[in-house]
Length: 563
Ligand code: ATP
Ligand code: MG
Image (cartoon, rainbow, N blue to C red; front, side, top):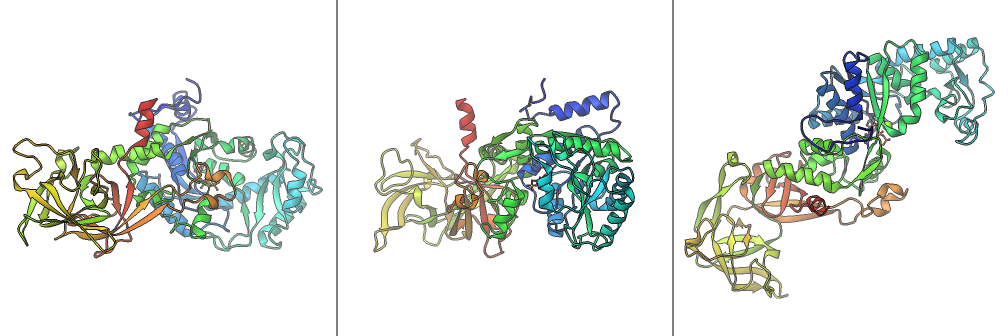
């Protein structure tokens, strides 16, 4: 098996190059007990890409009886907020994972990290540089040209110690000085050309308040935090592959208590989706969406609000496998996982999104009855419920056609159809408004067809869903489409111009079976013939709101069966 082999089998034991590594490290004693971590920066909400990292890190820990820490990489006080910390914890929990012990924070280690910076200075391996950010960039060189040494590179240990202490004491302005590791300005790897390890930021930190005005960079904090926590396998995405020599250099040059190793895998990319936090933040801040949990967002909270179950996200991630080659996945695969799961667990209900009134002329005026309706044909244990049938009902506007072609198997003048769980009806008359729009149908029903079968054996081609007018509940229903029209919206800076103006359609006056009013958000259901839906938290007792999670048609299954 080579490193990039995947196993798309969702069955019990996932196999990939990371898990193979862990297995062999445990087998030869390199690792006593596996420790992983999920290290989000709390500067945004988690998205479907993070779910891949979460499933991998927590999954490995569970499968090999190890531990997985949740560690907030909170080294940049300028962008980080408590709201994000809370949302991240909620999302990880909702995905079905439990971190070991309390959540950790890179900021828990600020004292130790400072001591280790001092350790580097004392050993001549770090220096205070007065070059500004732009000069540092200029001196760094390029992929083809070596860097140049800063004029401050040869400061004495004593001078560096003095300046670093004064940086910490708040004597200098933001950007006036930085601490850099002294490695190799001629290195072929730009990350090794004296990387910045501490910068001055006069800003209150959500956890450490005003205790610090110098903060470690990601590169300096990350591996050292791993070592402090005894992380054995530090898994990150491929763009950090070039940082690994620095990760290792720091571990080797510091008095760290453990020896973590970094492994990189390919990040998740998805068509019609942006997954960069910078871009997602822009969508939220500029109000192109209603918030981080807008059901069109690829965030975990958006997917949850849309009605996508955690199980389907885990299933999706496990089908992708873990590899070292970049690829872009179609949202249709996630949709497929959602449908496959919801088909098994979602109860069926009837709802009419664009109602057309039907009066059943031979049904007793003011009469009604209650009929038995199966909750889930895929799950006998889900039982059945009663639905009201009455003289006035609603059907879907597009289930009727006045001049219907032969192949139209739904309702048309003179044609007979089955009403789900109820009777056969025949359309006898069409009522229109002054503008010529169909506003009501007159029908007759056949009492002998109760339950949906004719005793004389006659067949109908169509079965329609419907809702009784006597007890229907009015609702708002929100339909969603891709947020972007461009399959690769992230490739251009002006990705906003590719927003899909039709990504949200709001329907009001939809008619629901009354039991739907009692569903809670997070409880998936199928509206018969229409798709899977979930109640939105915007609902009030008198005005329920539903989100369409997705339609019933599975385009992914179709793609697969063709190949
Ligand atoms: P940015 O969008 O600014 O690059 P980020 O998504 O890397 O930020 P972090 O909070 O640093 O944000 O990510 C936490 C962890 O999730 C990291 O280990 C990162 O490698 C992983 N991760 C982030 N995006 C993806 C993705 N698309 N696929 C897989 N893992 C991801
Ligand atoms: Mg990151």
